[in-house]
Image 1 (cartoon, one colour):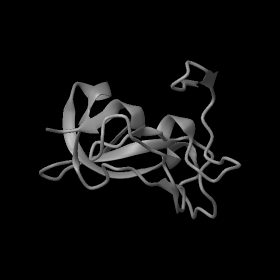
Image 2: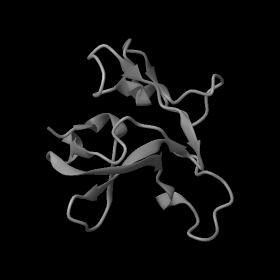
Image 3: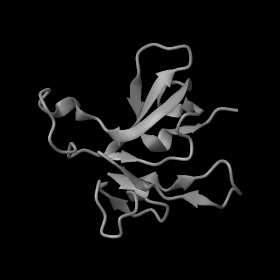
Image 4: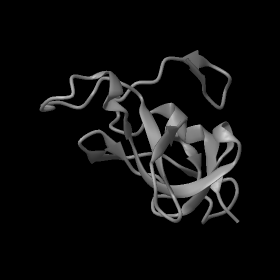
Length: 116
């Protein structure tokens, strides 16, 4: 369950009728004015756009770890490890990689912000 900006609690969905991103992926665009929001757009294969892709971010959900945002996509960990023929039916997560290389980790997309 996630609360949107109006406080309404809902279960996130990968698919919306309008074709725009899930409501919890509507986040501030840090390259624009503070009141501007970025609405996630589907990129294909379950991946979503994000204004911080490829940039250093702070993961507030994991003790302020700093990493590079690599993707916003579902985590297939509960799926069959074999050949995947469809997008996992799971909400997208932020995939982060350590700045100097190493093992990636995932976090809630709303828990990240641009590193200063």
